[in-house]
Length: 304
Ligand SMILES: [Zn+2]
Image (cartoon, rainbow, N blue to C red; front, side):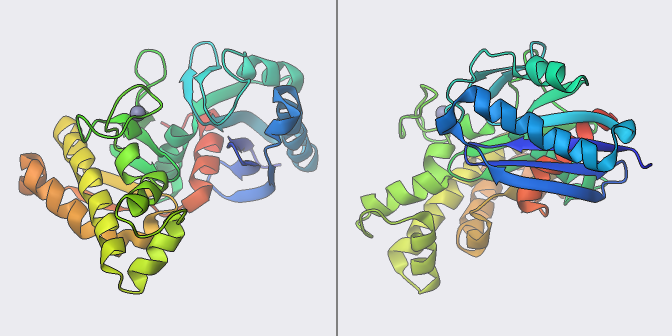
């Protein structure tokens, strides 16, 4: 019986669980939706049921542990979610211990972007690199920092909230209380807001703006340039702080790489001496949506 771990990716929309072995091979997977309308306890029931289903299929003897990636700020020591706009009702609930109690086995709770960064380091574009940053470009922007092969947690577990780096001091207000966070200037939500602002059209999705750019629309291209500039400003800060060799970008915005990347690289080049004089790489991540599952499953193995 092979040894395996179960990784869970709990999102505001999707709930997925995968059994992965120590070599990073996918063994089994369950995908479903997160039924937030049914309330927190129903979501926890679903998580436990998915884990038990995988454990029953593969045999409990080989299960090394369970890792769960969740969106939002977490308190690592307590195994709690402290502030999650995507998971109403979970704040300050002992989610790790409750799931662990019902499973009768140890559970590790982790921020989803941190888990994704670890996943990329383990089996994705960060293989063989011990120091890297991942930025996930979606509705918001998440971040994860891997230092010496391990997730950088800070003293509470809230390190790596890179979407809230200030890139425009008096920029757009953010739910976190700050203004001009990079996620307010470079996320899918920001793309949609900018499209409205430059009168491309009301109610355009980020995908609509992308399609317009592909069709040659000048204003749509400008929107992505603006996104690239904001991203480059954030990346320059990260390069200056960490001097890591690798910065990975993932998420739904990656297909627009050719539209935002030139402005992004120009901005990092202009703002970071370290970037100009080193062989720092800024590249696409490779695991897509699976990164968080890999990372969550990697946690119980304690590979580094
Ligand atoms: Zn913010």
